Image: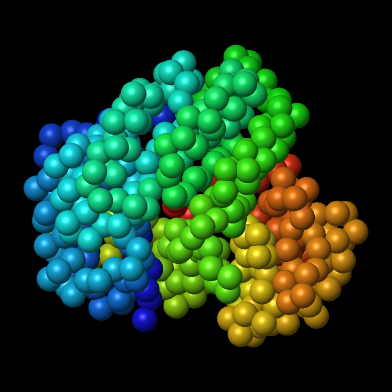
Length: 412
């Protein structure tokens, strides 16, 4: 039985310049129609999942009204989705109210991921964000007052015009807020975004050396503040880290992605993985609603990876985490022996200084983390033969470094 559920809420007050995720502006009754269609999709797919983790991503889920949230929570209860261990909702600081925060908490949501990105007003304006720095402080306190004790804050670095001093100042203010979790992404320039168009137009240049400095500063500052890095872009307060397991406040929903687990995905543009088959719902609210209302699945057929291709992708994703590839767990999950089947690739990464062997793990070094997409690409295989050339790593990344939300469908 699948235990992870992702739901996409495809509405934003304004599209951010860096964003390549599917979203639509809020229009008339479209949100109401979406919620009704989502509930129909929930009812039709409920038998596939007994969710331990739920993640509402977007878009901006916190744009949904109180009545719309009540309908969704009522549908969860109707299909028997209760006692969810980790229930995350993404929020924008401009759309958090005390009443909405209390409703979410009272209905079982126990983790909030808030998109801050920067504490610099000029950068927020440049990115097209609709919130101010004051709203970040206000919304964080509202969430605390509502009883949330597991809050993630999203940050971005290496932004156009961002200096090392500005980044350092943002880290200082964020650390003083005392959240349990931080997700910190290097900006990437994806096609079909305004930021990419500005780059092509020559409005700014990419400074890789400055990005490296910002990343080093990030790791140093967070380590000194008592955070543990458990994944390339994710940090958790070390006080929540048991001696023999994963951090309490780590995003267990995303960890399921990284270890190659299955997950049901609902809503327009949501991408799922069931029984070895990948699929994605249509990236159009009206077409999605039309299909669901007609009793049809609103998705493309998707693709099925061979066992070898799936195993190699799992290995590449496991490298995202500090623990790296757990050799015994990898064998149990995939049926392949990582040491035997990827011996040449491992040796090449070790010689290059990007990876190391440690007891029962194969993991990236600090240097390797900055080249994780290239390292992961060396582990990938195509359909059937182990001696075939590696596939391209489809994370939407630059050929040099892992940056931003570089997981195939990962949400934080």
